[in-house]
Image (cartoon, rainbow, N blue to C red; front, top):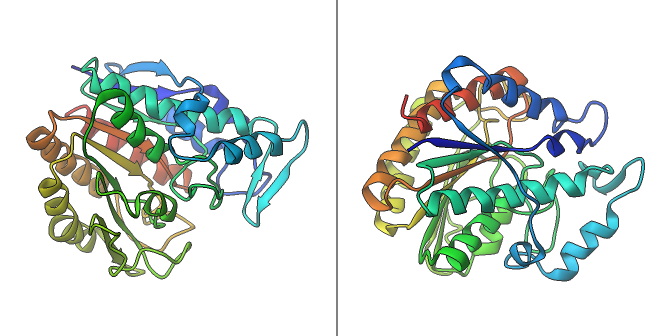
Length: 309
């Protein structure tokens, strides 16, 4: 059983402008890192486009159509103060969400052991009907709903270690007892959500905020005390990872001090839990990570851990 890498060159065609941290070079950096000899045993496949059926399990049809209509034929259109669309954005967003669902298919049918979807734009800030924070469609939410609708998953856990809280994922599943959302993130920081007191309608939201300057020891303690026990008790049929690497000490958009070793540790901890609770089924989705060196090294460590190395 192998690890699957899902990607697509359409990720290069989403361009929010010179100087924007969420840039095409992020995709290139991850792609180059995963071309190394250590990754020759990866299975690799192309991310398909998400269908309207996939997207509308999460987002209203009029929202999906509004994003499509907003897509410019040339130049850029601003969606909010830090999120914009270029002519290639809509295609990239469709393939990011579609790649997430495809990875779920491959893992849930045991064609591969686990999967990493190396696509952009990220998704975890996208709420049900609001794009924001560089995000348009919530790929983790699309993946969770697809696992439930297409594969009969009764419970899905989403673990998010991006430096920014996944307000969109929390918003979408706030009152859904079939999905556990658990997050470590820096507070205070964009988007301002993610307090410990935010627990969802069924106590299935788990927030473990970290403070600026916190490093791997505090992160690991938060995972071990607040998040891993809750995920294990939830007994999910699938674990999704919102894998943002912007809590790395090099990242310009956060102030945490994580290293590649911390991401590898967290990945192995989640895999061990998945082995115990859900047949090892793990699908990881790239979220943030804006220092190219930190992103490349962290993604490589994450995927090596998924491969069992």
